[in-house]
Length: 378
Length: 64
Image 1 (cartoon, rainbow over the protein chains, first blue to last red):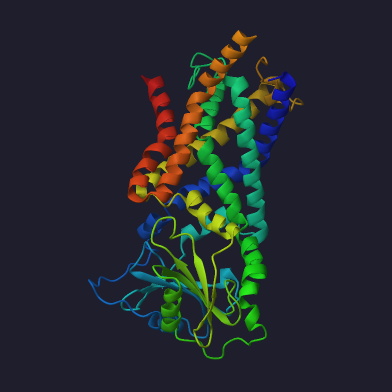
Image 2 (cartoon, rainbow over the protein chains, first blue to last red):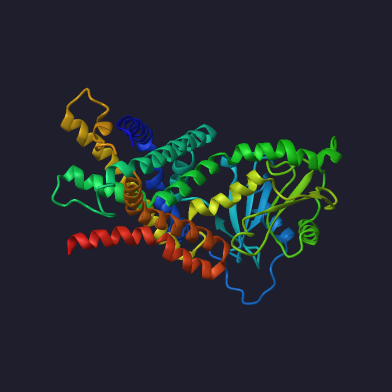
């Protein structure tokens, strides 16, 4: 690699890293507790616990819906959801209007058997951590900004891999030069940790970027696929009397045999049209449980209107989520995710230290310090 | 010339063999846990955890 090429890649690596350092640190630091958000919520008493009912029949969806509306008088139901990993709980989302802002929604948990209100969901300190991690309390603009930081992370990782060769070609793998200066020791650690975690960091970084585009993808789906699905019902007013949720669930299951309902979106919510329920069906494996299939049902009669697979970009979004959260391999995978997150913090911190140390050594006014550290080209 | 290319190839393998193996292990582990149920989870724990094990091993080796 020529000296000029090394210098160019060094510039890319230095400035893509530096310009995103602060936000990447924020994402890594907030991401760490979010890996264990279930456990932390349980520990702090923010996770509703279902009652014990050995072998008892589950409450019907309509009974849960009635309980949810009774718990929040004057508001409307947006969604009812069933979590595969928490079979004892049904969640209900209420809001001031079907298309009410997500931040105004109230999420409550109900016992899956007795339909008793178990308590609110998504409150407590983890909500603040989640908001910091997803949009820094800046809404869609914040999400897209953090997505852009993820793109910079990708560029920093790729340029780092390119630079790994000229910086380490004279060393054995995993060499830490203990007899050298502190800066060189940290350079060795930076190179080692960076290169061994490169795939995980790329996967988590890029799936995070995809997640920041979720609203845009949903809008695209609504404007194209959903619009085409509801086209035959154009001009129909919103339903005056909603069909029974029990009918909606039963009919949706007939259209998607072998699948369970993940959640139902009520007419007028962002996931469906103003006239239809949308039942989002899931399979029972780790993968198929993520790949939802929407079934559209008439809001008044409960009759099935249409059912199609989600387009590739929404499927990509759904598959990207577990790869970002690391919540699909039990507690050991969560612990490994946390360790890799910690190592990423070390890489970011050591990169910043190396840049500062080099600047100090060279004196002010010589910002291309990282490039000057480049070894003799081969 | 050929000798030089061969040396360079050996050097390249020496530098990148371990990182490429770890990258492949990570990809296999991430997908295995997603696609192969419980058995895949076990594979995932070992292979996704391999980079952590390498860093821990280097840290421990330096202390001893």
